[in-house]
Length: 204
Image (cartoon, rainbow, N blue to C red; front, side):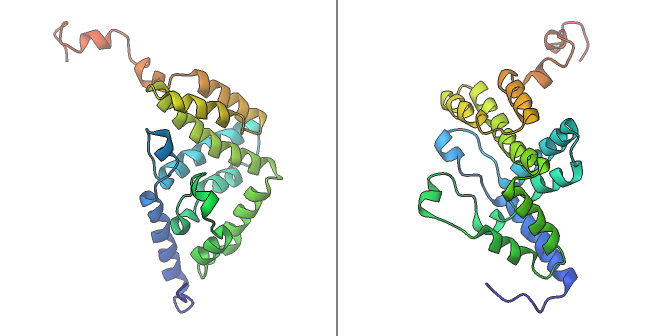
């Protein structure tokens, strides 16, 4: 790794933020096997953080800490990439070392590594909720692909549902599994909107 110690703190923070932007260009690779769907790590991390925020509110847990763990849980993948389950048979990476290098010289080291250690140990309620949020985002994507007709997504969904840990995560997962992903927008408008749209009543 190139020695970055000569760069001042603000420059290293800008380096760090540029590195975070790489997550927009880092694909989640499991969809190669599913045959449909796609997303990058930044997209996954955003909704995972939202789900974690919601779960923490439901569980009366520390909302900020849960959300932070979710937001940064895959930050190392800006350097390592995302390994799917087959990749991991043949490849490994030092995720902690990647985080240390990403944060080095920024002043963010203690916070970032603290979130990571708590998440990996999974001893606190907040860490368990963050782990559930990671799975729930994946479950939501699988449900959408299943609704679109991918039967394999249904098989993956059954397995993913078993990985949820907390009572709040399980409640949300069960509801996701039985809710059509399009209901929020398809059922929201006045039902007559769908027939009025052709101009039958003279309105647009």
